[in-house]
Image 1: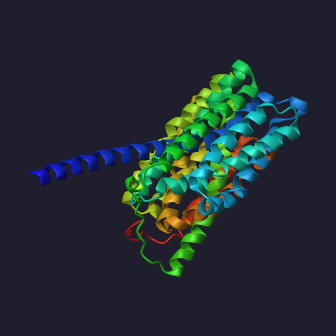
Image 2: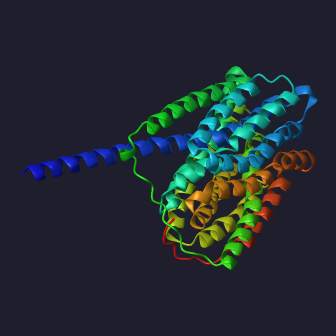
Image 3: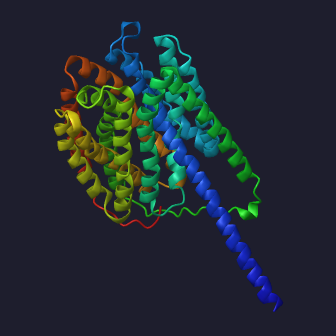
Length: 415
């Protein structure tokens, strides 16, 4: 009887421990998701704020957009050292630096008084924003056998950051001016950083026996020819896809401001509409995440990228309410592409490599994004958005052609 009682007590203790572990995992996942939201939100606050700054020092929208170039350069260039530091030091430590650093940089942007000071503050925002993708995404997929859904959920949070940026910025600009659009979110990010540090410290104080190692089994060996095909295909799809994603994310608030004159001319309303389009479209990532857990990522990527081609071509000339409806469809296929790339990377790398591999991936993608402000500003001022969206349609066709290089589905044994 004593043995039975002891066994029952141990079973109850194990169940309580499992519940506690799951609760801590959910809290950790929440912080990673909030981080993804902040990452994209802070990078795009200026995209809407720039509309309100047109005329500052005689600058056009195109010239203002180019002030964000250093931010996008930093967003890509610092991904590699961020991934390296995460591997050498601590992923949790780097995430703490991310929250605090991006918050303080945004606050500094709120106090900028000249174009040069704005460029410096935006550069710092981009530098700290570079931490998230190589570090946070590697933490999201760590130890999971089916990564598509986790990446899809995390991706929705990132896209909600894209949605919140124009909405919150439009409201704050209307109520308190463009400086508040940076200072208030910056303060919130710092507070989250402090909360995350306390959470990590609490985890570190847990007894060693209470911590269960995350199993990350070895993957099946792949032939070098397959790995090379995957690498080439990913590089090309990331190049073309990066142009598409960052251009449309940055330009959509301005596009709506020009194309929705018959609907509204209020910046707050433009921000609300843009945010709603991003928010609705973001849930496509969960659908795609489930699909890549069940079907070939190559097939899903081909379908999603193929749908982008006509979506951009149609969007090039639309105005009024049709532009909003087609904009939702367009953003669904743009956002839907994101978890496919990350799933492919995860299935072909071991956990110990992922921070560095994701870092290389995002260096490629985000250095491409560094040309986006210049591309938008130059094409917009010279030819208008119609030409820009035909360029995006061609870039989407490039993703389709590049995805054909990927090998057909292989059987995954573990991740």
